[in-house]
Image: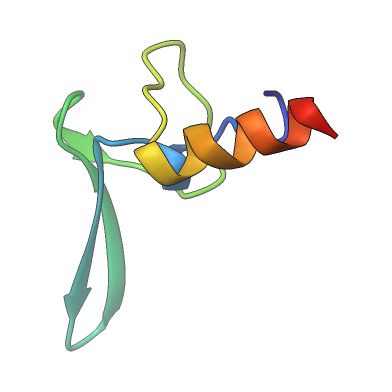
Length: 58
């Protein structure tokens, strides 16, 4: 699980494309974040859960 735990794999992670580049926002916490950050409120996306289960099975 540790290698999957990051903001970019969370259901609350929202990338926003702007003219100046990409911004990353956490809809749960309500502020900008970084894809590599980790918080205790992490809720993995369905696709990430499937990858974690596959990783455990192998």
